Image (cartoon, rainbow over all chains, first blue to last red; front, side):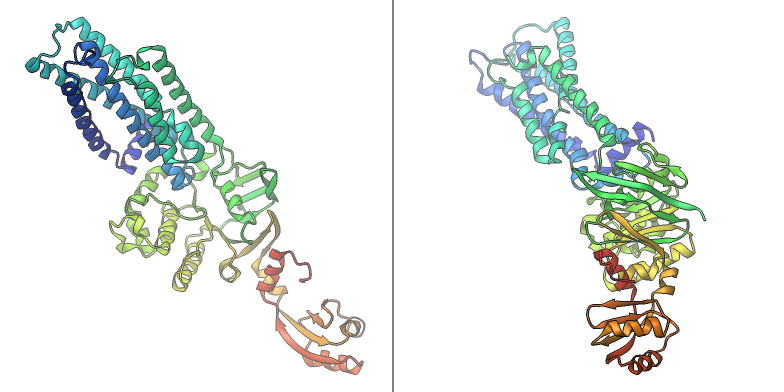
Length: 234
Length: 307
């Protein structure tokens, strides 16, 4: 049973395609929020859409916030609820290594989260540039170097966000609780995505922090795969 | 006689308590093994160890002649099981649940899905999500799922739980058919003796984690049937008569008034006349059948005064 096949079965089992609808709604929500900020804060001293750097950072911060919480709900659906509903008991009687079962679920969450963050970042960025053509709130010219730098920053940011989004798994598994998972993802967001709308000095800008948190997320994921291999199922 | 499953000194300790204690269980190929025990005796835990859900603290498990290790995943392919209660993906239909099960088990004959649904009486379940199933329907779907991959060993944890009398009979008939026609070996646990004694070939009784008896139904049926029960004011005197004058040793004294004699050849009238002859005041005398229920209830409760 290849990992790919397992991921496909997870997709079917949890009707994963519906999450794109949710992501779409999230996109609309993010867009409206950014527009709202753009209109309300216009003329303010620290207007976030005054230059490309702060505009892209604003977008990225908000997108990450939304999809880290989204990932928390995915972890709840794919892992925590299977334990709670005891379908995991059935899964573990199958001739498939347990860590592979868990790996498939985590990979699905990680890839989805990363892809959606990147996609939404880029989409919002494109919409921002288009809007700027009409309204011209950003006066500086957009150099290709700056653009390239932004893309790189987005990529690293998305990867570390998708990795740190796995941290709530640890809290959810303690009590097999959906609530604990989602709440811990919200708390995580407060830690790493605070400060948007105001000073664009969120913790995420100190590059060490997202990388460390991302590493912690990956460590938690790996640890859960090995630990669950031998843990009794009750 | 080959064994499909064996446990050797199997033990499981949870927080200092031995939930399963040195169990040596032997399940022969092709038989129905009735696993009897009161609630909390360790039946489910033992079954979880057989299906790799729980790792033993000590002892060994042998399945299909091979040792079961934490990574013996291939052996699991040859088993079907319902442990505790059949759990499903509630939002999906019966068909989708069975289809997923086949995929995970690596079983490709999808046409068996419809056939099995019909076999357990769920042909009309259609696209209904399992969430809307009654307990009985879920139980039957669970059985379909356990059977669909044509397992050699079927492990069922209290399969008739929640079924109505018709369902229970259907289940019983199905078990007998599976055993005789398809030669599937079954381990069925229950705390309902009446059901188990009707289908089982071998019965294993577990109490407080220990397997207190493992015996074939044939031998029990042979040796524990009729006895004559005598109520007398002085049963010890009656016992004396039985032992020394009738030369029978197979008897037992109960409380202060009762004597039971287990000799199949003895007639009530013979015993009565002998007792009266020797001055034993017989208050009542009757022939009884020692039901299996008494035998097993005794074992399950731990009473020692059962022959």
